[in-house]
Length: 219
Length: 219
DNA sequence: TCCGTAGGTGAGTGTCACTATCCAAAGCAT
DNA sequence: ATGCTTTGGATAGTGACACTCACCTACGGA
Image (tube, rainbow over all chains, first blue to last red; front, side):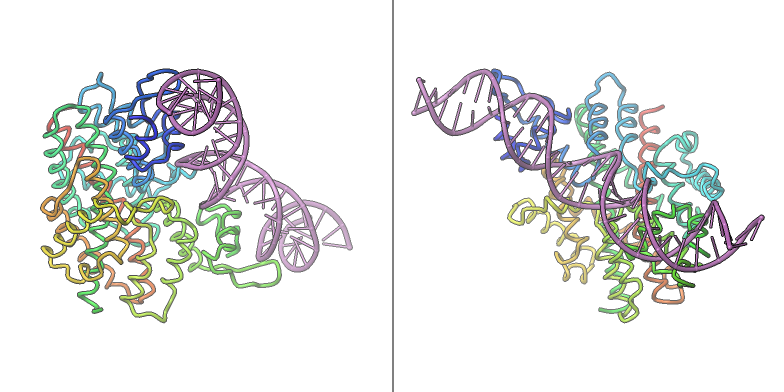
């Protein structure tokens, strides 16, 4: 498969593929000679993953490169490999990097305490120990602080049922992940799940909301 | 309260506040004379909402303007007003606007059918009737099609438990919304919920995932 | 042999959320 | 009164980012 074929089968323009190759998001093809390269199904697969991350997940190119480095890193154990890949993904709810939270903001302390309380009640001891180091934890705290400031605080009780649902979802995801044969595929699956299952959940939620609103208020 | 005070209390730079005024995201203050304007608590509140949408929700300025127009539009009934405000919000999972889905793509048809099946089983008749017109529906279909292409298809059975959870969440949200006194506040709450509860859910999910992964694989 | 095409590269494009600078009029402090 | 600051208003510039274009050289088929 040459670059033009890769472009045709993926729907991505040749110029963009060249750009991805340059940026290291796609491994170079096998060079037949100085001016021809051969690509295979693995390139197509990787290209589709890259597109999903960038187009659907709106993930910056530099971040995609980091994530893929972890996916491809056979030297790590599965737990670390998974963690590393998901750790560098953007976490919705994080403030923009150029406007980081003021760490002295008292509303953050309040939110942090509430998250700790929630984790304790859930029995998520590992998450509790890792605490603020995890981007997911920080993003959660930051979002709760913002909700407080807007006058719509969410306490641990409010979050508990949501957390239980997400626990179920996570169990389910890992079950599916385990059916895959290699750690590389498993890690890739986890990334896909993070990037693409999240939109599924959110859009289901919005559909549910308009359904319920129609039921209550007519129309 | 003058512009500088508004800036101080919100943590937003005066230059940015001027920009928001120019862009119509913030109503102008009451002009005391040609060079001084007076702002009040409602401006502070609106400014915080705008910041949350832009910084946390990463919503484009032009979209924020549209959403606020619906929040402020007293001429509409609650259902329409809610729907309109949420309709224009970005839907995660939508492809970037400059790379819209090819409508002839057969994988989209497959995904559409699966969503219809799911909605039928859930008994979400309104969502089913509105179908493809809803951005949430379109984004869901598009995301499922991408998952198919990546070799990790999600069928209606897989989604059913997630959808039930989201149904519960939606009911809960609307209950909270109904405690607010005016339609303007209710609409604002719905927007806040869409923009800020979603990060809460997603980060809970990621925490649950690493918790469960630690349980299964140690560390 | 020769023309079209392949892949590689550096520079350019468009978008977007600010941000910086200027200006003249109007306080406010002394 | 005087001089420093602040205001609203306007225009232009910035930096990040994901491409996208034009051009170059070297094949490779007719």
